[in-house]
Length: 109
Image 1: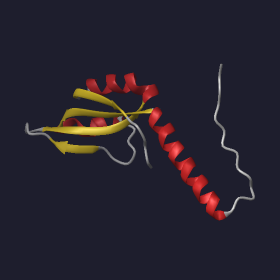
Image 2: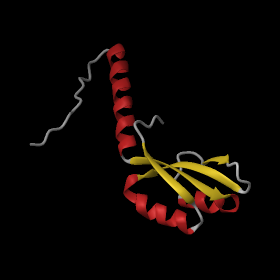
Image 3: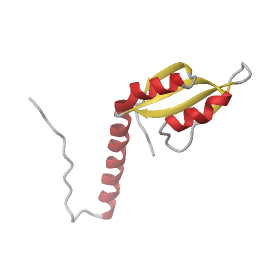
Image 4: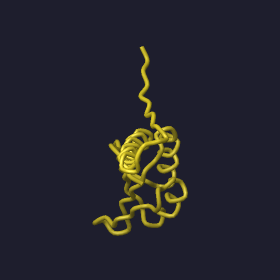
């Protein structure tokens, strides 16, 4: 059995009700975007951060945090789950290590 949820809205709703509908749509979209994405963290030599940045499709910019070990940083980003393995292979080729992948519950953009 297959089912589908549908949101049907009358064009005659009041602005107050439309505001609630827009809020609901926004929240649903945040969950749906998250389903197709993974949060990725990795350790990267500082001289390879630009190469990693060219591989990763970032939301706005890479998050780069220095590690305690000099010359290394932790790089964080979001990747599409459909291209996940290809991206991981490319990241490893340019020197990324200790790659962690986490599910995303919601993405609020």
